[in-house]
Each structure stands twice: as C-alpha cells, then as structure tokens.
Image 1 (cartoon, rainbow, N blue to C red):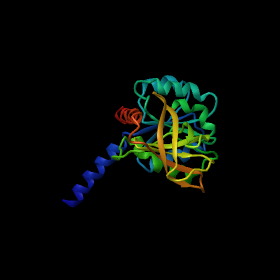
Image 2 (cartoon, one colour):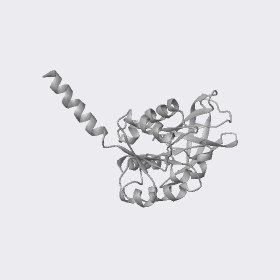
Image 3 (cartoon, one colour):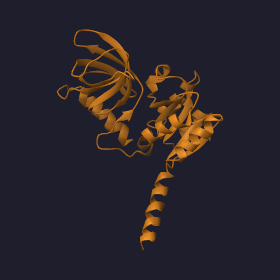
Image 4 (cartoon, one colour):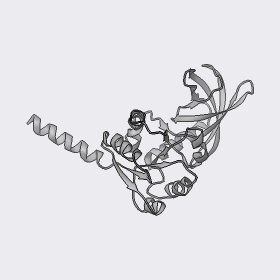
Length: 237
C-alpha cells in the first residue's frame, strides 16, 4: 500500500513538472546541452526554437525562455512581452554581464547566464529561479529582475545600481557605491508595465565582498502600494 502511495505521489509530481517548458532561442552547442541538462534536473523541459521565433512565441505557450543578449534580441523580447500568453514568462539572458543586460532592461530580463557557460554556475541559477518558472511562490515572494535603479541618499549623493530581486517589501541591489545599514535612501526604477516610480527606503544590509545591499521600502510611503499591485499582477498572470 505504501509503495502504491509513493508511486502515485511521484507520478503527480512528474506530471506537474512536465508542464513547465523553457524555449531555448537559437542556442547552439555546447551551451544547449548544458542548459537542457540543468533544467532537466528540476523536471523542466527545454524546447529549441530556430527560425521565425517571434511568431512561434506568439502562438505557443512557454513558462520561460533563454536567448542571447545580442542586438537582435530586441525583436524576440518585443514578441515575448506583447504576447497574450507569454508576456509574463521568465526571461533568461545568455552572455555578457548584468550591466550589459541594462540595454534590455525595459523588457524585464529576470536573470543572466554568463558566458562561457559553466555547468555549476548555470545549475545554481536554475535552482534559484525554478519556482518562478513553475509559478510556485512563497508567501513573501522575491522576483529576480534586472533593471537600472537610481539611488539618492539622505545627504543628496546620487548613484546608479542594478536590481537583483524585488518583493512588495523591498529590493536587493548591486553597486560599488558605499552604503551603510540603517541609511535612508530614495530609489527610482521602472518595471515592464510599471512606469518609473520613486519610493523612500532604508538600507537593511550590505555585503562589501560582492557589492550587494538590500533596502526595505518605507511602509508609510503610499507609492509602495503600486509596487505591490505590480507584483500581485505579475504572479497572477
């Protein structure tokens, strides 16, 4: 009886996982095999798309896609974000750095696989984002997304940062500029359908080693509600 129950549970999980598909857009070997293997470890199917990719993405539903961050990527990204069925899909960039991905920030790149593609680094990134692909979220969800963020400190110092993750309560960022925990800042950013917004925040942590820091949005700042609405809409679509 126990074995039958185990088999039934395993079958349910496999069926659920088989429903998640990632489009590999014109990805060549050996990167294609590395990515396919990494996604497969989490039960995610990969589908190679060649040829008329924008049209394909408008017709067929995928949970995510991986594409090279080259000048031609705009056409594919435009097709993704204007597609009724794929406009909220998870978008992975391939190649370059987070700074280079800024060219495409208006399309909401969620994460970047750096080149040359290393299996261990790729697997770590897939593991960190798999629940977003499956649309399975924790109560306090953090959405990985790369966009440019303008930061103004209390003393008027201005600098740019790159977002890493965002939640309705705060955001993690990367910047070489020094900040300190408890420091008051105001940040500004735009996300896909969310027009540029300013919100008061407080620095909550800083890791000098990798130049990252976290901010908590001011609960009394009414503009924070627009961020929560955007996140709720993102997760429900």
